[in-house]
Length: 122
Image (cartoon, rainbow, N blue to C red; front, side, top):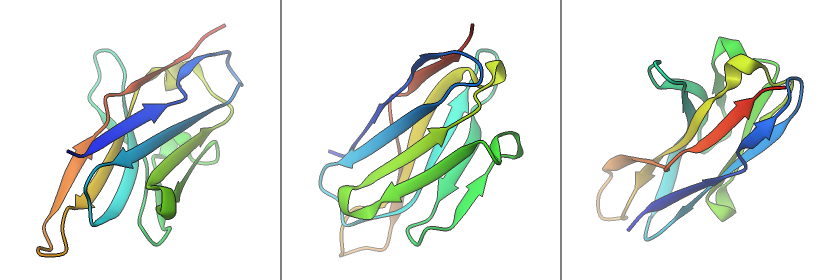
């Protein structure tokens, strides 16, 4: 059973910082791309940032220069450092991982975490 467990969300004032973490556990062979998505009330889920196994990154325009995604392949963990937070960053943040389960097949599957709430408010 593959599980993605996020942590680090909470309430922060505008201009503040938070660091999200997501740990992948279970029986897996390898993890390809890992990413963070967010969904605000009434909005569709959107990509915030993604990182490949080799470290190439991709960011939504709205967070470029403020958020940094990183990963520790040895720990099966992805991080999202969020600085200069704004009210419009308020959302539930979801971790996503594209995982190869076994060496026997090259098939990859996308898994999601349960989400962690980030609220930016004074």
